[in-house]
Length: 433
Length: 205
Image (tube, rainbow over all chains, first blue to last red; front, side, top):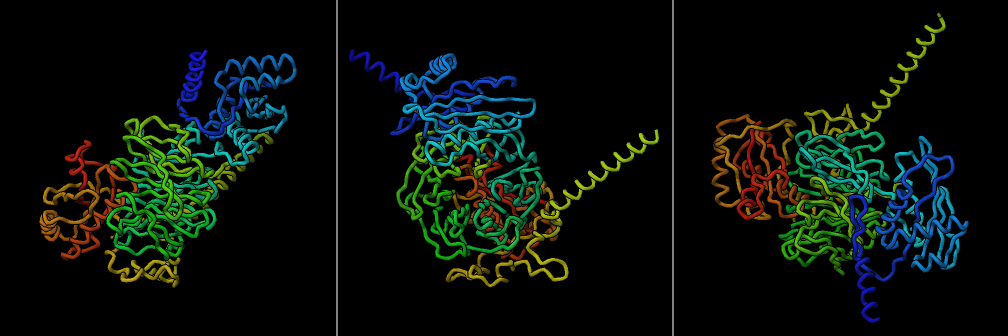
């Protein structure tokens, strides 16, 4: 009996640690105190609708919800499908049976697909009480944007159950080298729909989002100087916004003050400046012979966190938006860089070299309470925050080549987003509905 | 028959009008993202026509008289380096064997005595060829973060440019660019390879 119990325990743990291999991306989930299991049986097809794979929408929603850190999918898809079938036959939901399967929540959905668009009716239930949490119609989405429909449903579930903002409806821009040169790319926050935004086959670097996710800014060498370019995402139109001699690098956008902060080397030394998103109203913040780089706004736009080697090694500093009240935040480690301020304002993520490798760390905005998120013998750099302030994307070369990963702020979730070529410098969009 | 011709004519006129309006749409966007004249630095920070542009080392922050123009104590903006020359905006692809590559220590942009000796040779060549524009390219090894290395590469190039200016070369002929760790000379991952990659090389336009 005892041995049997042990076997069951091992089985459960191996399931918990098992990789849910779906499409090309795998999520590694470590067990933690509270996550709820949600069952999402195959969606039924409305009468008269065209058909898609009944698990297409549920699979995307499952992955979004697992990545959210609040939910797990049931370990046996067949039980879910069978129970759903008997529900459909009986014409009512057998909540005790769903409860017996260990599910806390149940999402039932029905989609309608016509030649141009897709919609879905979804019902979310609390399995223990049998209460309906919501019943909603989602749509219309263009037929080829069916993933966006799934992401919208995911974020609504997260919002209703946890009162948190989900991040399924967001995108990540990054720099990719697939063939010749490095170009700007974009993908959904789950790693799907990867595509190129530029095809300069030159060198692009350090992108960021601006104006509510309608524009992006990035450095491109294509006109023989590292200039700052803008791209309007509605039509992929590009234009130069800052082309001073030397680099125009590392933009960070503040939505609140509508200002960019960036590094310019035009004066013969790298200094931090702010400007508007068309390169006007330039204002210089730093005056120091050392390297001042990688600035990032606080969400209110009243402070800037940045890297400087003025002490002799790269360390992280903070100053106000006038360049005054400069304070050093990091005193441990010989190389601390790439600071990014959380959109919630409470923490700063950065890369720190430890044991010969760079790792992603979090700290409070006064430099205290370091938390190390990544481990091992590989470099982990370029952290950027998701709009929920609980997830980060970063670059790691743990598989040999630099690729983009997502991790959450207690390191219980890790997902690799890119696989082909070399990928780096992620920047996460605001929520895009 | 006449109606059909008229109808076709009308359709064409409408299409033309639509095309024109689209062009106007493009124009407004282009106006917002004014494509700079290649010979000039960012046009947008300078006042528009009628007024003279400020001297190149004055940026708009200094005119507004805001707090940020005040350098931190003990420093004045002028001792922070020489403003960079306007980029040539064309490929510099000629390597001249007399212009030697200069190497650096890890995470350093200091010029060693050896580096200075080599640079003096480069200076002699450049002095003998006045009017030639050179591109001073800063590079780093792969260790360190991508953005920081772009800064470090620029620092290396700037240090060399500054040295040559102090020796008496014309600043407007000395252009710099940093590729950080993006263009290694040697793809290896050992100290020998890294030492080769921490360099500044000279190219002639």
